[in-house]
Length: 124
Image (cartoon, rainbow, N blue to C red; front, side):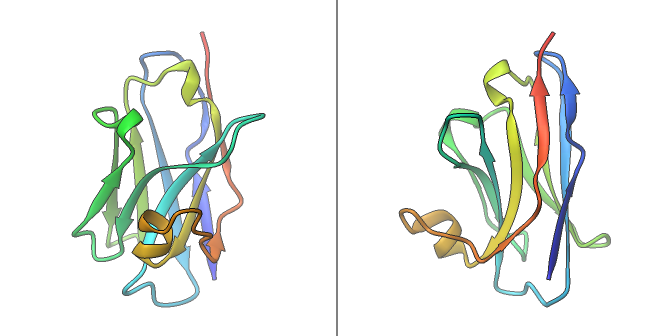
């Protein structure tokens, strides 16, 4: 199984960035893809998730209205669109795959599959 993130980089405050997670190696039917981030000295946090079916999405309250998650069925990728980014969005962003329960609902859930991460830096 491979989850490969792309699209990270340096962006100015107020700008936009789109991260992609390419998933391969197994059927993800019934799974969900979560976008997590971890800033230096901070705990990892879930910012968004989407069921592989694309029907249901979750956006964390503190990024709601700025981040959206979507799925590109043709490319087998899950995207995280980040708009109006802020310096506090600076972190390494990871995509992860597991059940919706593990990613979104279970307190302290640990997804089984992880990507290698992509750095997002918001700075002027």
